[in-house]
Structures are given as C-alpha cells and as structure tokens.
Length: 447
Ligand code: ATP
Image 1: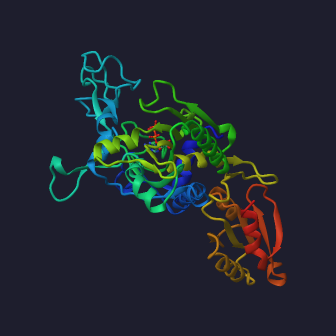
Image 2 (image 1 turned 30 degrees about the vertical axis):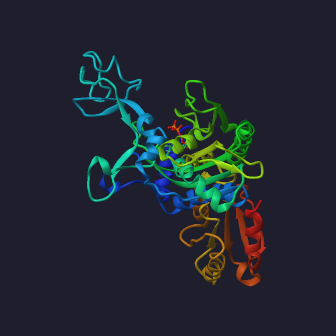
Image 3 (image 1 turned 90 degrees about the vertical axis):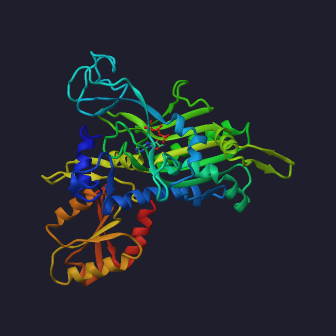
C-alpha cells in the first residue's frame, strides 16, 4: 500500500471526477462529499453487488426502501433519543467543539487549568455535555416541539417497523431477512478522513429474523458470508480482519457483535467497514411496546407465536467504496518505459468504465471505425471513446480510473477488421476480430 494513499486518492478522485467536496465553490461543507461521474458509477456498482448477493440471488431475503423521515416515537423506542450521544466539550472563546475524550485536551474541561486545543486559551472549556448525534428538523409548517422529526441515523429501524408488512405480504417463513440501502445522517463531532466518516452517508443493512435458539448459528453463518463478500470485491484478505466487540463495546441488549475491519493504512490502520450483530429480540420487543402493536411471528403449522431474534449485517457503502479505492491504488513502473503509471486495480465488476476505445491515430478511417465500435458496445457496457493525445497517455488515463480493458484500432484494423485489446493488469495486448468484441468483453469481465 502506498504510504500516502489517502492524500493521493483525494487528489485523484477530484481530478478524475470520482469525489468532490460538497458545495466546494462556497468553501465546502464540513465532512460531506459529492460523487462525480466516475464515483457515482463506482458506488452504484458496489451497491449493485451487495443488492445482488443479499436480495436477488437469494429466496430468503426481501428488499425494502423505507423513508428517511419516520415517526419520532421510532427513535424513542430504538433508544436513539436517550442514548445516541457523545460527551462534548466546547470552548467559550473560539466556539470550537471537541469530543470529551479528545487526547489533545489538556486538563479537566470545566476547570480553570483546562486548555483549548484549538485557540490555546485556558479556562474556556465547558464541562462535558451530552450531545445527540441525530439531525433534527420540523415536519409541516409549524416549527414547534410537537413537529420535531429526525433524519434517520441508521436504516435498520425502517426494517423493524415494517417487519409485519413484509412478512405478511411476501408470506416468508422464518428464517428470512429484509435488506435495504439508503442514506443515514449523523452529526458526527469528529468526522474526517475523506469519505471514511461523514455526516451524510449510505448504509447497506440487512436484518435476518430467526427463531430464538438458532441465532448463534445464523450469526456465524452471516459472519462468514459477509467476510467472503468483501473478499469477492477484490479486497486483499491480508487487509481484512474480524474484531470481536469487548464487553465494554457491546450494546447492553447485544448477544454478540463482530466488526469486519479493513486496513486503511497510515494513522487509521484497521477500522470497521461492517458490523455483524446478534441483537436478540430487543428491537421488535421495543417497537411492540412503544407502538402497542404485536410484532410476532406466527408459526401456524406448530400453532405457536414468538418474537424473532435478529442477526444484523450493517455495512457502509461509502466506507466500503473507500476501502475498495485504497485497496486498488498503486503507483508502478512500466517495463520498457521511463514514465511510471498510477493504476486503480479495481475488480472489473466495480470499474466505472469497462473499456476505453481508441483510434491509434486520427486518420485513415481509424476514428470512424473506433467510434463505430464504441457505439456498438455502449448499450451493453460503459465505454469511453478517446482520440486525444499519444496512445500511451490515453492508456495511462484509463489505468488511473481503473478501466480493465483498452481497445485500439490501428493501421491493420481497417484492412482485416481486427483490433487490439489491452489488459490493465498484465499489460498484455491480444489481437481479436472487431465483430467478436462484445463476446470477448463478456467473457473477460466474467473471469
Ligand atoms: P463508527 O464506530 O466507525 O462510528 P459505528 O459502529 O457507529 O461506526 P454502525 O452504527 O455499526 O457504525 O454502522 C454500520 C456501518 O455504517 C459502519 O460499519 C460504517 O461502514 C458505516 N458508518 C457508520 N457511521 C458512518 C459515518 N459517519 N460515515 C460513513 N460511514 C459510516
């Protein structure tokens, strides 16, 4: 891994249109990012891979797209109103805020000796106060306490409150799951590290409802499945590990929890990209209590009813995208060439562009033929036509955004209808018939 991989990625992502700072022309907003033309494709491909693995390729998981704004009682039942808090210290002089456990704070906040890590003043730090990480807003035209709603800090609650709707409409039998991808919002006190920790992000969550007593077997099953999925994205197994929650880290209702961690390098090191949690019957029981509605599973053949236990898999789409980028970034020398190259060795299924299509030179019918090929392939694969500059530069530009194949129309092409196809990783070039390109790409992308 490159030692400055994060800095290099921030610059590459901006330069090549993967990720921009939000509202950049106004000086940017804190810790919110916009995905540009290539970034939106990369993140969409990642989410599609998740949706395929979790919903489409299985008959025991149903998809859902619940609203971001929910009844405010949801967040009382879930424990977020009372418990989704971080202790916070603010400075009366410079107005900056810090987490109470910020190692840069010297002394005990609230006492005259405590020193603000930002402005350096002594005695200006307030004693820690509990700060709720949920964003509040008002529903309807009246701004009063009765109309407060929250932007959801996780997608899971939309699944719990729809448990009966989904189970009854699909007639799924336990064990079964409900999955969704959607935005979540957290007013994080210390966001940062590019898209690692942001205040607006996307989650890919699945809640698997099981019979009590079978929960640990399913927990082990999902741990294994989710680790395999991350490896299937091309993440280096040496950069992936499990972290078991310690007793202090474990939520009071949780029966077991493991994080999938990825090594982001630098000062970050191994960090969570997904959590796998055995939540017992906490969520359904709480929502039943707060809503007054039974949230049970009726096992008709055995004439019994019970509250299912939940095994949750909760991944961040943005954080996993960052892991994929960190994992893929390389700077290399190229044999026989003085200039090196930057390459994103993305799994082809995730690459925003599948093939670059170039005429070797801008004459002798080569551009026309290359444009024809691009037009033929475009309905089937995202391709990029480029005729500007030396061919070597065009290859480098595609390497840098992770395009797995480059197709070149050269002097021979117009006479025998063959083109070269260059592999991003091996740099090998093969000559193939232009009419076979769709089949060749299909075969190579499936490898
Ligand atoms: P962390 O301890 O890093 O704040 P968490 O334990 O609060 O994470 P969960 O609530 O388990 O995270 O959320 C599940 C996943 O959602 C995380 O593994 C991560 O990928 C993603 N996620 C959580 N908070 C953020 C954030 N502020 N920005 C980007 N992704 C996030």
